[in-house]
Structures are given as C-alpha cells and as structure tokens.
Length: 398
Image 1 (tube, rainbow, N blue to C red):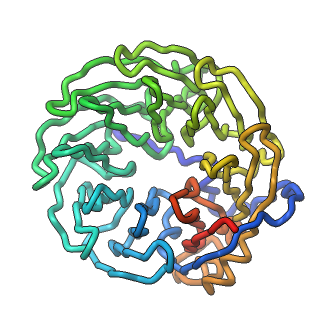
Image 2: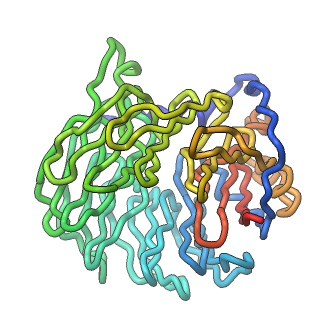
C-alpha cells in the first residue's frame, strides 16, 4: 500500500498559490540578548520535508544538510572545526551521544560518525527514510523509519538486532515522533495515535496504549499522528497528537493518567511541574503536568508560532513563521520581547535561500522562508536558532 504524505500547513504551500499573508506581529521590545555568531548554511533550510535539527553539547554544534554535508562548529565562537561530505541525502539529526554523532538519511540509512573528526564509523541500511533523530543508550541505537518500523541496532557496528513493525494509515502527516529510551525500554509514537513500549534489548512489546482515536468521516479529519518528540519526567511520558490529545502516560504500565483535547504536531516541553505546548493554531499553553489543567494560554502568537517552546531559565523561547524569536514568561505567558530576523540575517550575510538555489521555482513564497523551523536549541551557553532561509545563529543572554 502506498502511503500518502500530508505536509503540515506550517511547512508547505501549493505551487501557484499567492504569498501567505500573516496577521501583524505583536508589538514587543527588543529582548536583552546578543548575537554571538551567525552562519549562512543554505542547504539546512532548502528541503522542507526533512528534520535536520542541529545537535549540540557543551562544546560543539553539529549540522547536517540534504546534500550529505556534516559540519562541526565551536559552540562559543562559531568557528568551523571540520566538514565532511557523504554520498547520501540526510534527513534527520544529527544527534550527539558522547563522542558519536548519529544521522538518518532519505536513502534509508543510519550513519554513525566521529564527533572529533567526522570520520565514518559505520552506516546501516534500514527499510525506508529516517526522518526522526536516532537515539542511543549504551550498546543499542534505536531508529524509527517512515514506513512504521523501529530498528534496534548494535552501537559498535550498526548491525541490526531487532525490528518492530506497525501498519501506517494511508494518509498521515509527514514525520515521526522521536523515540525515547527510558532504562530498559524504548517508547515510540505512531501515525495511528498509538504509543508503544518495547524492550531495548530485543524489541519485544511491553505495552501499547491509544493516545488519540481517529474521528470524522474523511481521512483528513481522522489524522491523529503522534509526531512531536516524546518527553519523560517523574515516571510519566508526555505525548501530543495532531487533531487529538495531549496526554500523560505511566511509563511502567502504559496507563493514561490524564488526557485532554488539544491538537499539536510539535510535541511538548516539561519543566518541574509545568507542561508547555504550542497547539496547531499557534497558541502557547501552560498546563499542570500532574493533571493537565490549564494555567495560562497565550494567543497573541496564534497563526504565527512555528515551534514548540524552549526553556530559557524563567522564560520560554518560541520561533514564528516570519523569523521572529519571542520570549515569554513561564509564570503567566506574558510576551517579554523579541529578536527580529533581520539581525541574524545581516550578521550571517544571508538573503532568502531562494536566491541561492537555481531550481527553486516558487519565488512568490520567498517571504515565508525566514521561518524559524525547529525548536530553539537551549544549551549551557546560548540558544541555537535555525531559520528556513539557511541561517544558523547563536543567541546569548546579556
């Protein structure tokens, strides 16, 4: 059966459509941050069908692009440490685990490369393209593929140890949730609204639970994909489903502790006892993680917010479809300030990425290409921000 892929409305527009018109951005002051560095890396934003989220640790930023290039930058200075070309098209990651970098490809492979040098350790073929970042624990790597399979690979050489398979709906959003490994289990979400727990060692099913049931008459109305990254905190797994629910699930039994109607394909963020989520309309919510009760809701970024929130001390950081970066109070959701797209754009020397790619046809969409495309990546030093027009920027609090 051929799987039909539906792209998120945040990510695509039909060819020939007029340029999108967004509502006016809320007026906020400049937030007190400085730009540490910014690079023009054209190909990180040139394919909207992949999730090439930069990986960071306390020293490095690693970036992969659709043309098979992997680059390692110094986190504080932005200086290029190394760059390697591989004969593939990357689609997920990179993710840093100790001295290993894991990357998934559109050509149905998982790559393991050296963080220090970029040299290839191994690559392992799987069943279809990998569009969620592979995960690793000790001697096991877990990779979820776009055809409904999860692979358990041996970390030292990539050899396949086990595979788990589920049927996928005919129509689904483009993407997979990112699996998480908790002790001796791996938990993953699927396009049919189900969540499963598997043994890390052999892939055997521990439990299965339904986060959201399909509703409606049409296939479009019945989309319930669990697409955003899963989060584990205090014995609970938190998940969100498109056109479905946000839910807390007991990690041992798979029992749903609480669930509430809310559509989000971006996933959730947890901090202490608070859960934060950007819904499909761009509203930002703060929920009680123990009960799911609403603490506050910020709707001034509705139709604009393009990422789930990132935690930044007492604040949240959210990107929008026009390239603005906003800070919100975790306490009450107040908008505190913003960083406009023009500042990292000027520092990097980047224009719209359509100016850099000869075969880009829909010139009318060029103003949309400034969008912040992934959750801002908060680390101990800075916030790494990725823009659709190919800019990678490091933002440092003053």
